[in-house]
Image (tube, rainbow, N blue to C red; front, side, top):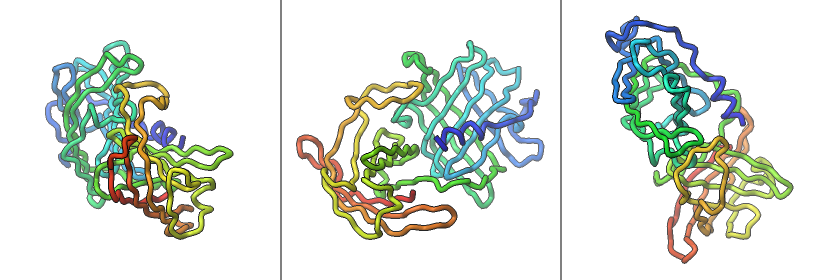
Length: 295
């Protein structure tokens, strides 16, 4: 819920500009945004786009398009600080306000961010983008969009909470969305990757209540890791509902280590894990998969 609210709060309030003769901004710092949509390419004035960094994510987008461009739109990027997709949105005001987004669960399967570079020290952000975005509720309707963005005045906003993060060391998964759910049975920390994996740390008590140390786990342990791969059809829905038949479950065994409980800058727990994952036929999918978490 925090991330959804954060996305709404970080919508960009940008001033209108009628000139698109070049891609340099008024201060000449070289920022530009180029886009091709509906077969039309345009370089947008600096005052129409913006970017900032907040809580381990990059928020970038276009809010005001010159009238000379045939398609009036708003476009929003939510990316990890390493350039992986959390969500990309496109609102086409020229076509009955149609709303397009990256697909549920596996956004990088149909839309790509390439040549990403973010330098927090000098506030420079660059990336290229290309792929299909799908209309909300009408998966057969999609829009192909490409372009690139250079922004040299990226703001860094102080985070008001400690973001949950999980990293896998071998680079096979890049987790960009997190969901925490609680019940009488305990807590499940779910991490969704841009290529359709979800890793869950399931515990019969909140992670901050765990003693530091290492915990071996199997499928029946009360503190364990579960791993799934999305195998359903690519789709876009308002609520991204979980349909169990769309996911392949792996059997995981391994060790979770709770390293530390910390109070600054906000209360959080750090740890590491190693696991072996096999499919229903006993075939090894991941052997000695290692990673770390902060939450």
